[in-house]
Amino acid sequence: MKRLGGFAIALVCSASALADSYRNCQQEWHLPHTPPARIVALNQHAADMLLALEAGPALVGVAYLDDNGAAHKQSTYFAVPVIAPRYPASEVLYEQQPDLVVGGFATAFGSGITSRSGLAGNGVASYLLESACAGHSLDYFGHIRNDLLTLGKLLRKPQRARELIDALDADLASAQALAKPAKPLSVFYLDSEVNGLDSEGRQGFVTTLLAAAGAHNILAGINQYRVTVSSETLLMSDPDVILLADAVWSPASRKRQLLTRDPVLSRLRAVRENRMIDIPFTHLVPTVGSGKVVLELAHELNTL
Image (cartoon, rainbow, N blue to C red; front, top):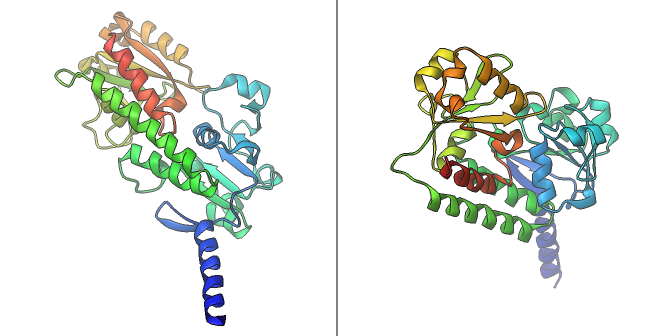
């Protein structure tokens, strides 16, 4: 009986350890306890995923909102306090007393005590969305599924995670049914106009997003993530449609102004025929709502 009792205790301890351990960015990590009681989300799309997973009151702070100006002014995002306009200073982050910090981009984690190892050394777990991990594959929808499964496990919301994955897959299937593979529309994505015409190549999520919506990124042949093109190069490609990221730091309205007033860019067919689509910036990164974004984009492209 003693041996059996010891075996039972070992099983309980083993199950507890498994519940608190998770794999992220090809490494094993440990959460002090599950579910986490105080979570901070760095980047809007990271917060969106936690909100969709019904983190509830456990989500105590969010920072770096990309396309919600109203939340910036009100200092709340879906009733969650906005603790910083960009990434918070270390003292602000630690003031929240987090037990889990979730980042949407690798830049969310700084150096020293705000790095992932620094946080771990202070008893704070961290999670970086898989699409932002170094050396990640281009299976962006797979990354979203993995994020939902892992975070769902940590939040003890596995059923909710599965529901969100099913919704993602259903939306992707519906978008595929709308696609017209015989002649996909060519699309140029304008991420930012601040330092040139910034876009994404083959390695960027927008290439995957457009393909799922039945369109083609004109820069998909360039095997890079970030690509900057000249006005003349873009005019030579003359895409059917231009996709405009709408961000607080680079609004779509400002991009439209550039496109319609620039002597070269105004000659683009998509500009002359007003075939430009504004999309919130956080809809152009891999997150919980990406399936819905693909489906809505597929519908809109079909009307052009």
